[in-house]
Image (cartoon, rainbow, N blue to C red):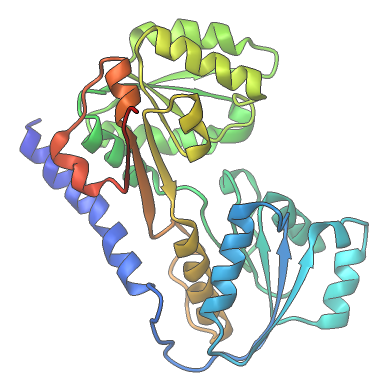
Length: 319
């Protein structure tokens, strides 16, 4: 397949990121005033990304006569506490932020619509008919397209995963990778397997290691340090989903834009409260933040697409 084919393919996949972000940008006007009562459950408001997404959500709804009630996870962690709160407040909609809050809200089996965000690997949870949300990760076609665009020589992409947590995501990734001319080389592990052994066996056969949000792989700080150390020794770049891994030596990071997620949830909630049809129950994030670690790539002697730098939000240079 020609380079022109892939450029056209990438443009078609990545273009919606720009278009959707424009549609829900700050200052957009709602079609009509939204009324109702919303119960927000935050897994941990001390976590910056959770606090930020909630603040953006609240700010986006300021012009609507919506009553918002917030509660922290520790207040509803006891059995029946959330059920009682829902009975007492009778909200029109429940918005959960983070995996703990979402699981607790789902267990309550309330009749009200349940909306979630900031949930890692949401596919592993059973969805109810009244559940909606904004995914924590970009769509796999977007995520892999960005990697293909910025690191075009990385055609053999390795990924280590625990099927207990990310089986559905890997299954979806296979189709997206094939369409983009990427060979996805998978290494399946269990909790009893050695991560070091898995990484050592995988690295010689790949151009890049794709580190996904899999708690079965990212077990602790020591394991993460080991993954990055082994990859650097063999001069293999790591592509991942969180800027927290830049300090370990990630070469490319693509994260969902947190403020945009908060505004996107508000738009979704407005549609639900207006009883408008929602085309997709769980939507991918509309915006992304791309970080290229130029210093790390130079260190391991791996090139990147110079023409793609206009699409990068942040470049890390050596000092």
